[in-house]
Length: 487
Image (tube, rainbow, N blue to C red; front, side):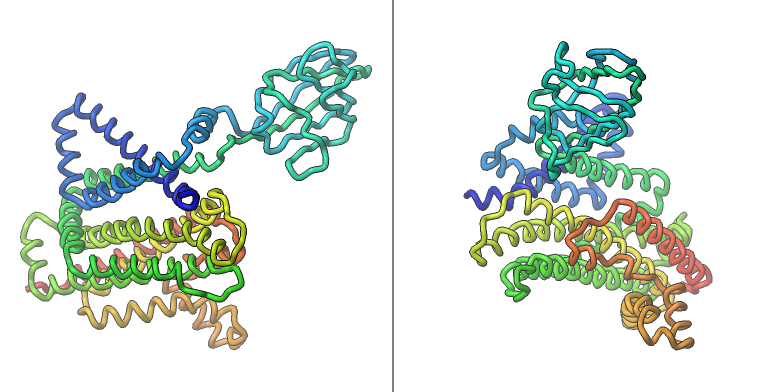
């Protein structure tokens, strides 16, 4: 049971965040119902009739998991850390301490056990105390002029502060005023709680984004809803989900023989599996919902109604993206569970010290950006497949998209390799990198190998790149489809 609480706690924390997001959405819907009942009913219908319904079921299952796991956890530290979230962070204060002044008060509030780092810089000698009347008699800290005093947990300097502080008293006994700069960085006892608001905001953003698309493009949203429901009702979707779950669980017990690096191999294999399954589903769905409908003249029936060709293509693309998102949500949750469990499993199999839950949490949060990037890549491939499906059937679509997938990963390697010194090869490599998507942008094997995290700035740049490429692919799809004879 103790090992269960270790590897399950990271997922428990993230599940609490997603559950909080759902709770906030329910409250917002209740407020909307009181203000505008008709709009609230329309929002409810959008959730029930679209892809948000299975997404809600998945998130509700996570909430149920969090509820079941709560008795095995100690929520007191979590609650205390959440209460302190607004009281921690980095504080920078610059003050001028008058000459020959004892006990000059400056309001600075922090707890010693929450200190991550602090520094004091002054151009004159100063004595720092937490109560009046001490001066240079046993000061908590003594700062020498023009010498930075900087403490961190790994430094040889004493922390100095033992009790909670709300005011510091500075004593300047020199004949000159002292310009003092203090930088104090603190964090809660459980820093992992910072991810709870992120998880909640992600859930809220997902629902609001879906509803915004429904509001701005209602006809395309109707086509997207029908396409997504048809896609997830196909046996292939369930088959790929089951294959993904079985593979992710199997990877835990595969002996990689990497001398203690099995977790890294699991993360690489798991992300590749989820991404490939999502891309296969995207290519197949694009061929069935676009190419087959054009060949079967179903598209002609849809376009005979007040629906433009642009709305048709955009709706089909969104109708493919939503099931991909659902697939990532389901398989991603299983993946996070297996990675967390793998940390404990490897320690037990290698007769190492049992890890703490924080070790599992670190491994889990490091792969979330990788899942986001893999989702971007699957969406880009879906956009390309939709564009090709407007003119070609399933088999040519699969062959072309498979070639684009391979070349998209090889393009940068060709440019960087020794063969890239050949002018023609270098030109081909650059041409591939310009025309085709550079899929290497979505790989984080380097971050996994170096046990480092992907910065949020990189995720934003990758999102911008993906949006631009999807827009270009949709423009190409519209050009192909605009003069396509459907009769």
